[in-house]
Image (cartoon, rainbow, N blue to C red):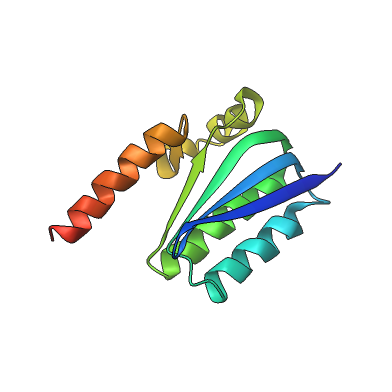
Length: 124
């Protein structure tokens, strides 16, 4: 199976990674490497995974997601996911991971959250 990644820097240190394909044992390293690069070289503060094109996720894909969340938390950053396909969302529900993740139904919902978060930061 294949996986494509497209990185967009929305503003300094705020990145969206749009994924398409399968996030599994043969592709997870692509995501791991990209996120590691963004965290170390790009000093990412927020990384959002747009999962709209992910058709399949394996345990190694789930591991990559949690690894990304952990690495960003160490940097006092945030990790978000949007547009989970029903079959991918079901995987996270089965392992009871969604309550601990920042998952949004779409980009608008996420943008509203980020606006509130930034407003809180500016206002102390």
